[in-house]
Amino acid sequence: MRPYLIAADAVFDGERVRHDLSAVRVSGGVIEAVGTRETLGGGEPELIALPGTTLVPGLIDLHTHLLLHPYAEVPAQDQMLRDPLALRIVRATVAARATLAAGFTTVRDLGTEGAGDADIGLREAFARGVAPGPRVFAATRAIVATGTYVPRGFAPEVCACIPQGAQEADGVETLTRVAREQLRAGADWLKVYADYSYGAGGESRPAFSLDELRVVAAIAHDAGRFAAAHAITPEGMRRATLAGFDTIEHGTDGTPEVFALMAERGTVLCPTLAVNEALATLRGDPSRIERARTAFAHALAEGVTIANGSDAGPFAHGDNATEIRLMHAYGMPAAAALDAATHGAADVLRRADLGRLTPGATADVIAVAGDPLAAIDVLETVRFVMQNGTIINL
Image (tube, rainbow, N blue to C red; front, side, top):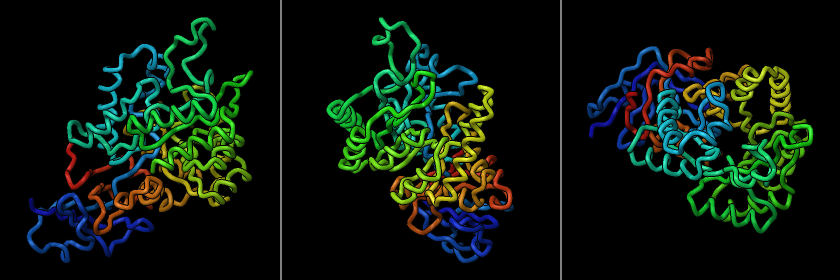
């Protein structure tokens, strides 16, 4: 198979858009070289001319739910209780196709929300070319404390019979068993709800003790896997950070003190600003946008490592780049926001071959019009997608 030469106007190198680099040569699914059309044209590669564009590494979204679709269409609880698993899986393949077409060649799927271990099957189907979709890092079922998650609101005498959107566990012994079950099923990441809105007044409260959280993180790390914590409250964030979790998801009410702790421990924040804005609009609660904006400013000020994670699913798959635009709108420099969705996100996954346009990296390449650092919203209308050295025509 002839190599490809993808020729554009510029290349994003992780820090800036470089016009002295304007082409990427790809061979056998790997980036062979980065340079110019003139310097890389030897051997008559197949030319892909993309004038007026910038080449960017395939984008990465570290927080998605492929097995959910927008809550504005069907509430989450109804999706979990009323939609057959087969329907949800077919919907997920459509969602994956839209995600890939939007330039997101890799996702971390953080919970099937009542669909069991279906994300493992999706991961394998996309990897084997059965259907088009992003590279998936799967978490199977999120782990929640008994009685804290959804569906809920049923009569007490039938609560135990209602299928849950996550896997319930309590205490060190049960958490150990559940964590190991999920790893056996093929989970790349373990996800735990360190807090949730189960308080007497519906407020978010911590759900697990520090010792319980430490067990899950240790089991994940012992297996060479990683751990993510849903955490909204400062105390939930504090416990997950001290327990050794690799990422905190949301952090909506985070304080300077807890973000300083995260920075000290190297804990990464996936702020999920896009889903926050979508749900604030759906539920008529603009205050949650201001809370998230304030927390994000604190995280930036304290030097927390921030990685791109949109929480797509409750809002439309394919709109994942909204998160990058919002990180920039909330105060993150454009280059840093784009890095958070490429090189930085790949580092969270411990995949040095992803998120980069460098020799030896996996050939995930997208093209966007103009300069994405001058107008970051161009990332929402991707012109060209290559994944693993294959041109994606969707």
